[in-house]
Image (cartoon, rainbow over all chains, first blue to last red; front, side, top):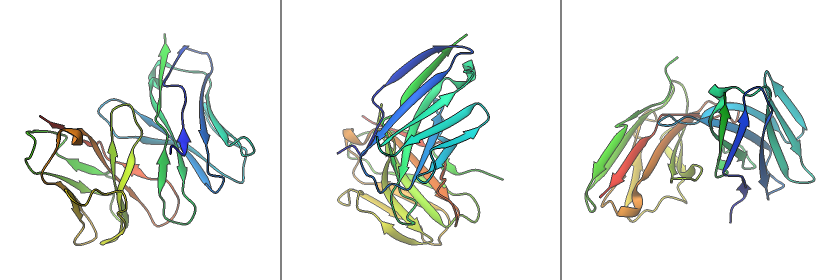
Length: 113
Length: 113
């Protein structure tokens, strides 16, 4: 039972264009959502997060949108840069202060120069 | 500030052999997590520690896996005996007393032959 799903295994965009990575979840009790970025042979690094009480959070070139009614969130990267090429994981925080994260399968983003 | 440290980075063993992974979290982080990441998948929680107490080990295969965090700082994850299906990346993460963000180490890539 995959509670957090990233249905696109890969995405390829041109440098300077927008990258949109999507994530769906099933549990309406998740209270926080995070995006992590992972380069090969490195651990995931935190990118941006959003509380379930908000619908948008922006940090520089990165914006996360949350649609609670659709149980869907997306990460927008504008403009995309070749250094953004990595695997992006969506994660949801389980209710309660456990800090337990449930991850999606990841989407590999390739930004072409 | 030093990040989460893991060793070894890579380990190759034959099946039925034991193996151990070590993790040193970020200084002051009371919560420590061990995750398993299979190829093409997101990290999956194995065990969570609050200080020296394992508060969530429901996903840890206890017949062959064990973990300890004796002094509430660094931690060791052990597999004995290893099986072919244990080949994966083992990630350690830590979290401070507030917030949801977890900080990951680089992981240990285990190959069981």
